[in-house]
Length: 240
Image (cartoon, rainbow, N blue to C red; front, side, top):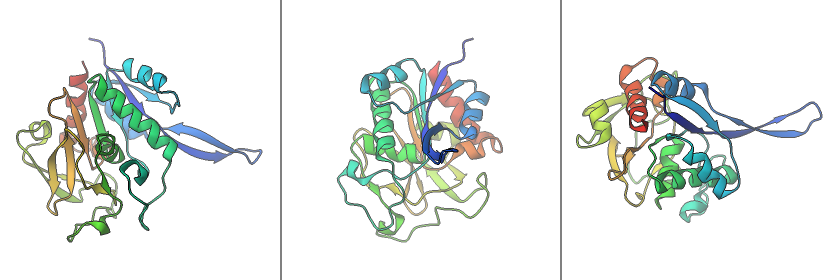
């Protein structure tokens, strides 16, 4: 059986060459690639492009799209001024990845969005973010763990009538590496998992074939815990 082609949206970083010139490069962490491969997909990296028609073409040739973790989103996309604790942003990358998400939703391709991707999915649908967890009007858990990336940090409680609930059950222990979180929920999205402090840990678009965002990093846990690999397997199955 043909393995589905999974477009993994690339991020950017800059290096300095021998002429002391700044050179921008595209990258994806190998954990994402390995998980797609182990789950039965064929991963390809989608480089940042600037033309919307080209973005639509990128999405159209793929059977599913994976959005990865990374930098903070520029708050201009949800009509806010920057908070003092806003981290590094790359507006060009934000624009590209938001357009990838919109193009994916427009033609109902399966979408798995992780950490930053989960937050960008909400922003692309008109939602907003807490720019830092200090803005949450209640006490929150530690969401940026001081531990190896595959280790548990906290528990999440999952809606049983959700796609994630069918994969993981009523609850799961997850890792955590974020200082931002969903504030106002985007259009047509539902929160389907929360931490014990009420922070949104998963969102879904229920009328679509497969649209799932998770705040944690299952790609770091999947080679250690089968339940996290099952997220990727379910995603890939929906891409067939």
